[in-house]
Structures are given as C-alpha cells and as structure tokens.
Image 1 (tube, rainbow, N blue to C red):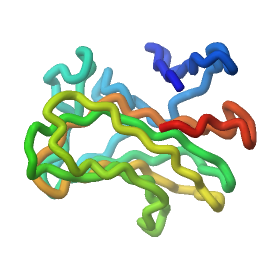
Image 2 (image 1 turned 180 degrees about the horizontal axis):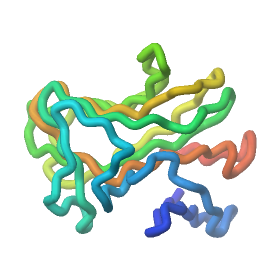
Image 3 (image 1 turned 30 degrees about the vertical axis):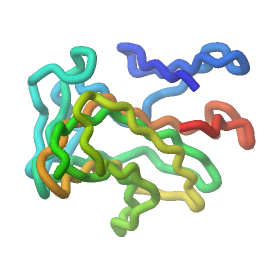
Image 4 (image 1 turned 45 degrees about the vertical axis):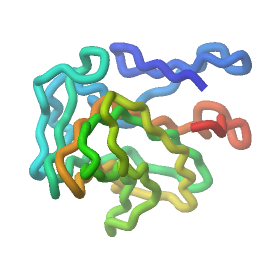
Length: 168
C-alpha cells in the first residue's frame, strides 16, 4: 500500500485496486508543517530543525509525552497508524499509542531500536468498541526521540468492511 499525504492533509492510496483512493489524516498537523495547537506537550516540543525530507519534527525528551485528541473511533474498524522516527541512540525507546479516556492502550507502535536514520514505522490497529475521547500519544522511555509525519487513516471507512489493506 502506498499512502501519500498532500499539503491539504488529504491522503492518497495508489494501488492497482484502489487507483488513488483518498482519505483524510485523522491527526491534525501530523506532518509537523506548523507549530500546532492540536498537540499537548509534556517535556516534549516542536523542533524547528528540519527532519525527514525537510518536514519539521517533534522531539520527545526522556520521560516526556506529546498527545492529541482524535475524532471518535468506531467499533469493528481498522485504522492505519504510521510515523517517521529517528533517535540515533541504542538506549532510546518509546511508543506511539492510541489511548481511550481511561488511558487504556488500544494499540501501539513500539519504538525500541536504534533508528540511526529517519525510518517509517507503521501498524494496523483494530478497534473493537466505539471510543470517544481517544488520543494519540507519543512517549519516550529512554533518551529523546524525534518523530514526524504522523498519519492515521480509517481504513474501513476508506476501503469498506472486509476490503481494508492488510499490510502495514
């Protein structure tokens, strides 16, 4: 599956079957193009240094988090979550998690290896019940991690029940 995000926040999927199907990124300012008021920072910040392919990035310091409220998530749907990560330190680790209002982890991408260059990490997360007040949350457990290009797409809404792409 090839997903590309445009400057207007619209994602395009180019596959033979779906021929540039479009979906909207559920994460506001996921690309780090602007300093966003959508993100809440705790020992984390917008990093004005250019990151992956000149996109601005966020830095999450050790023990820090950054989070953002998501639109309602629906039961029996699959969501594609991806981002670019760079840390350059073997002791750095963290995670990007989808949390409900009780802070229960609904799915995560573990960031537990030495990403010495900007690396795409992704996961398909299946939600089993409707979730209001969900958040996407990035956390650093070890040393600081740099993150950018957050993308979250409702695959079921875009491709239809049972037709969702299965490859991360």
